[in-house]
Amino acid sequence: EQNRLQRLRTMPATTQDGHSVALLANIELPQDAVAATRAGAAGVGLFRTEFLFMNRQELPGEEEQVQAYRRALEAMQGLPVTIRTIDVGADKPLDGRLGGDNLLEADGNPALGLRAIRWCLSQPEMFLTQLRAILRASVHGPVRILVPMLAHASEIDQTLALIAEAKSQCDAAGIAYDRHLQVGAMIEIPAAALALPLFLNRVDFLSIGTNDLIQYTLAIDRADNAVAHLYDPMHPAVLHLIASVIDQAKAAGVPVAVCGEMAGDASLTRLLLGMGLTEFSMHPSQLLHVKQEVLRADCRRLVPIVRRLRSLYEPAAIQAALAELQSA
Ligand code: PEP
Ligand code: MG
Image (cartoon, rainbow, N blue to C red; front, top):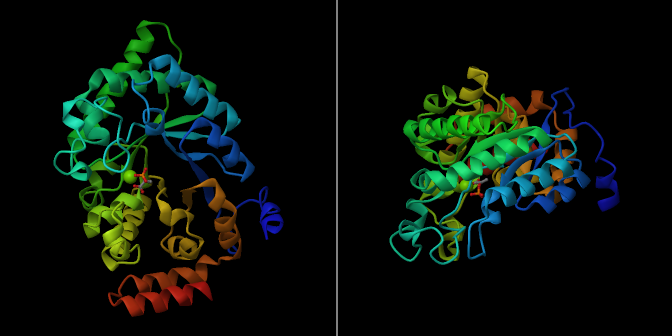
């Protein structure tokens, strides 16, 4: 089985009816890029940079970050690397008091607290350090910036302003960087999915984070075993949000990916293809399994089934449509 999958590594990920699909890797540390290239990833769709900040007593400095991003870029050998800005909090806590008083995990409700982009915007010097490090690394390969946990227009506006400021700081210091570096928004808070034009009008690409989108849509803590049985990617509300984001992004001509766990679940590949998705980012170990599904799939058969599935609400009916997709 592993050998057979390994043979798919260099094959283009194209459906039976000729749609070409980008299969990218999620990484947590630069050294994970090795597994990504081994799986034949077309790039990194999600570099979870918060892992550089976790399990330590002080924040990594600018130089250390440049080297980490550079290492990932060099390992990817010219393929694009999507660097997500720090997404700490809740399931990804910082050590001790590193986050400052406002990020104390013991208080309140960390999943709804000052986390991810909210925390970054509350620590502009820390955030500027990361943005400068990403800009400096961008001369070593194609980089895209991805911003997590957006809900408000003001959050992306402030982020874009800080990116512009980081660029002027580089300019003033005579530091080279990619001037056309793209900026994307993670769609993982239901409000962002429901008010998508706010983001379509401001960014170059979107990436749907289904892990948090499910958590916040269903009010199910993704790390709480007591409610794990209610964490359901096939809930019709979740499916509606994902399908609607893909539809709207395509209509606006804005590239859209899925980078949550759903993208790496080979039993959901046909569902996402049938929604029109052409960019998936996942753990490297899942990539060839998903590629096998892409190679076998025919969107002409999937699209009408998914269109019908989108009008269903009953779990049994949704499951039946999903089974129909598997044999289509
Ligand atoms: C997600 O929320 O789906 C996602 C990809 O980000 P993370 O799992 O790191 O929160
Ligand atoms: Mg997330």
